[in-house]
Length: 215
Image (cartoon, rainbow, N blue to C red; front, side, top):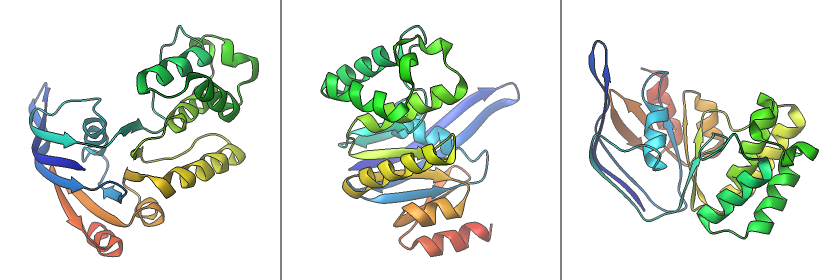
């Protein structure tokens, strides 16, 4: 279970405080596939970082009894001075997964060849993206967080990401934030709209999409 209770997030800017979340409430059960729709700048990425424990709310309570991923494909915990293999071992120890199995999975998934044992700072952006996707899928989470795009790179690697994501989705929940209704329609069973710092939930995805497109 994941609960948001009167969650606020305020950033200090040169022009004064900016309220990204304004007393948001949510309750998401384990195994649910939930989409959150919002325009660019609505605060979707900030919301996802709070859900993943990467960022703290300004006030309010976040209660979570599920093991949440960091946003898939993002650079949580990556050390640029360490190799891809060393980063894989670090993530395995951090989340309590078998080290050897985790390293083997990431090495096979990312397809970095000898660069897997080289410092991450030497990677191209495409190589980094492959490593990040591999690390994201190497841990069995109760709920996977997805921020907009699921995959990156060429069509073959994108299909590889999609297949593994479908396998994880079959046994775990997902929480996907996007400005694109097609993403939510493809992967989610229920949806909400993030608007004016508040979450408006809809049991029917099509109803949520219609309301979002009418904004």
